[in-house]
Image (cartoon, rainbow over all chains, first blue to last red; front, side, top):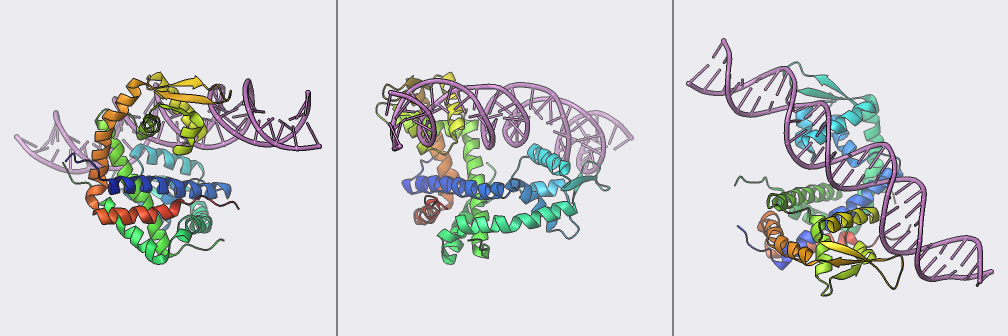
Length: 150
Length: 150
DNA sequence: CGAAACTACATGCAACTGCAAGCAGCTTGA
DNA sequence: TCAAGCTGCTTGCAGTTGCATGTAGTTTCG
């Protein structure tokens, strides 16, 4: 399994990396200009806010976002410091933390969304028809299959 | 220009970010396992190595890769420390550095490519037909248009 | 000419990250 | 039942990044 990549594949690779980094940088920049924290803060708040109870085990949040465990741990430290989230020891499993979103956390997420959404629309949506967006999502979806064991 | 993003657009956005991060992590991981440095090292070496002379102004390398100016500066520090590249003051412009790739630098790039290429093939190419790869590149290309001034 | 603006590059500092290791608390199986 | 291994989370350290700023060389133009 050490085949060389074809030209089409290499082209897809470079386009993928450049497009993601370009659009990501622009979206992050819009958030920053509006005085908001980085996207990863949004991701965590979003995971919790979509739960009516506003509570999830840290390990579950882990599974939903793309962050190393120690980085999530420290991100939670920062969120907690800003009173957006707090940790609660789990009754069921002494190792586990429950993360609880605060009102302030819910409010921040809610205020971030319009800016975030507009940025996605401006930097991505505006360049594609709705059909193109669907096709793009479809193709990208093929790349995320779970890594098979070796 | 503060329209909300459509559902298709948001789906394309999340697929884009996840696919890029997933594939990037896998490719970087393959390089690391093979004992090679990060991809950005490759990018710089590649820019220089494709020049027969092996020389380019730092500012021009800047334009080709996606790194903030101060980060390129420090990346060059590291490459220089490993004797892969060295800086040469420009005769024509006293502010400018010329970056010169060393034999060791050319050799490293050449040895990295098979691993890099195989990783791209495995983690991206293997999931797409050649036609799909072309279509993906085409769609992604639409996202990179130069940012218009406000 | 010469001051003001601009360009190329570098750097101090604080924040963030990756790695390796650590510490409970669970779970397993002889 | 209890030692060995696993899971969830945390942390010290060294390396990397972002931001703001600094320095020097170049261009512009009154």
